[in-house]
Each structure stands twice: as structure tokens, then as C-alpha cells.
Image 1 (cartoon, rainbow, N blue to C red):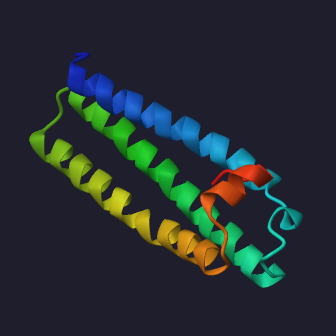
Image 2 (image 1 turned 90 degrees about the vertical axis):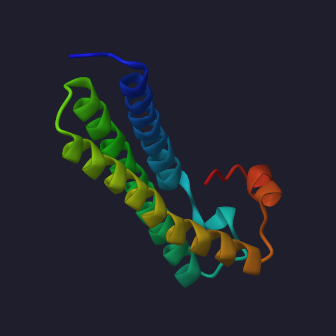
Length: 123
């Protein structure tokens, strides 16, 4: 087992994204309909579903970074590392659409980040 800078970077990214997932999931559980009165009930449920998808994809990205740390640390085959890099890039790109839909939904309703911060909503 070798702890190179590359291995540590992948490991730290995986741990940080895993912690971010946990924090966001707890925040999603606290997200209440009354916090965003501009949104109707159906749109609010769609918003929560999109946020949940986005957060799950963050968890997947975390696991892909941990996989890269493992492959790099134990000097596995170059194909395994290439697979990990392709997987990580793919998961990163896979996480963009739900985030864009959430932000588009909020901006269409006239809700920006400052309004969310005032109400204590963290996305």
C-alpha cells in the first residue's frame, strides 16, 4: 500500500463528498413546505425529489473517488484506474442536470440564493 499525494487527494475528495452527502441529506429532511411559500405542493415535492437525486449522485461520486484511492494506493492495473477516472467524470456530469433543474425552478419562481439564506434553506 502506497500513500502518494494522488491517493490522498482521491481519499480526501471521497471523504469530503461523503460528509457533504450526509450533511445535505439531513438538511433535506428539515426542508419544509412552509420555508418556500412561493412553491405549490406539487412543485415542492418535485424540488425535494430533484434534490434527493442530486444528493444521491454526490454519494456515488464519493464512492468513485474512494475507488480511485483504492486503485491508486494498491497499484492496481492501469485499466482499473482508467475505469475509475471515466466513472468519476461520468458521475460528475451525471449530477449536473438535476442541479440545473432545481436552480431553474427556483429562479422561475423568483427565489434566489439570498432569499434562501434568509429563510435558512441550504441546498
